[in-house]
Image (cartoon, rainbow, N blue to C red; front, side, top):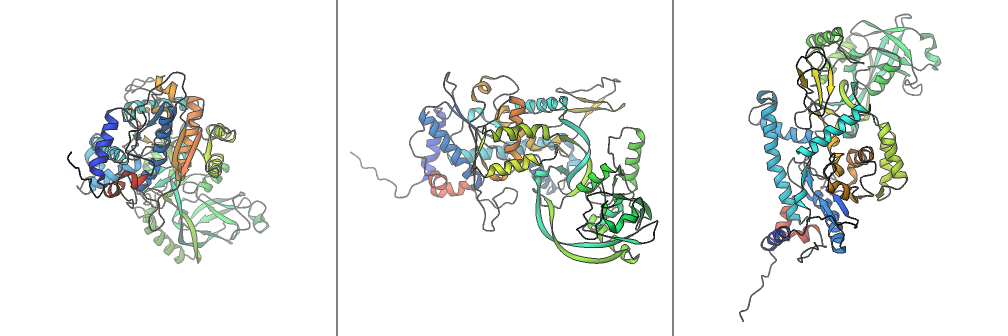
Length: 584
């Protein structure tokens, strides 16, 4: 008998790829419906197609794979459904960055060519991610792989939008949003990260018209003062009781604006006087609504001061009668027009000091909202966007978790869920991007009629003129919120949907409870009538040497494939896998 010498060093490349291919070819990972038997179902959190996986994804794969293999070995009908996410903002940013190296912009090539490039990107990076997952040994049912922008999921997204709109749970209007000047789009509250930064309180003096005295107030954003439409005092503040019904003269613009009495002015903070800029501050917007104040926008969407052109366009819209409720006026900022907000800040402060309106400057540290994708400072803006009314959707989701229909492991994360859902504001779902699910709203070019439709609308039903579709796309999380049922064929009544929904367990990092987990819970209840999973298992995050979580956006991830090539999938990811075929 011929002696065969065993290799001294284990070579994963020679063994694992062949073994995995054999398992997949023989259908060991495919799920089968078995009448009378309860299935075990997991939907994979779909990784973004912005690059390649890192060790954080490997950590996320491990418990899903272990649970899936365990239930297969028990003989349960078991489905682990894989897929990828289109990731509107992040993917579009990557494509724009690649185009910039070619000397091109989105406007240069147009929407159709841009989307062609985006689908090509998806083919390249989506395919790379799937191959990485195979390298990890993920025993998914690849025959059911989905993508958040495939035809079936697009149908589901449009169906949910239309249903929520018809129920009055989706509306379009001018409201306060978080605007990222770098990504050039609105983002939701959940996408704002707060960072402590050095800053200043600039103490300004506003002259009172009726008495000649000066009111002192402090601001961290003096460039917004051009959009002030009031100054607020507390109605119970004895220091200013003689000023009820009076006015101040807005410095630099020499414009008369009212002094309003509102509890937003805290008697215990500073001088108790607050400047009110309804177009550029969330709290000021609410004050403005309570006192019917004008809303005056002074920033462009790309981070500059507004000028004559923007002011004329806004005035024309208002004069046409087509302006929506809370349509902001736009100020021609004169000598400051066209300056960046930071350039304008310096110029405005210099002019305030020259005019005797700058009393003092105080150094402070304060939390500043930044975009979670690019980390640019957020500019709060009143903007016409699409919103989801959250309170009617959040209430039954909170009730379901309190009743134990869905439980969180570790249990402490339940508090994060409650805190978010019980204090959430309406969700801004429109994004000023090209890559994503386009909003199914159509507008008449002649009479302004709006139609929400499941199918394309070319001709206005009111006047017969041509219609055009809304240019914006939906927030990525709007489509991924439907993942547990859209991936199973909803809104069609498929056999997979009937059998495998609700799913059993969701495995996820704790950092996306409000981004994704909460939204899946309320979406499942609203559309399917029951929670999408009975258990949410949260694992920790893999972090770099600086304590930052690994992220494709930051580029600080470790590629698990490099580890696998060196040590093998078992050593790199899990001690639970072996060389024996998985139970089918």
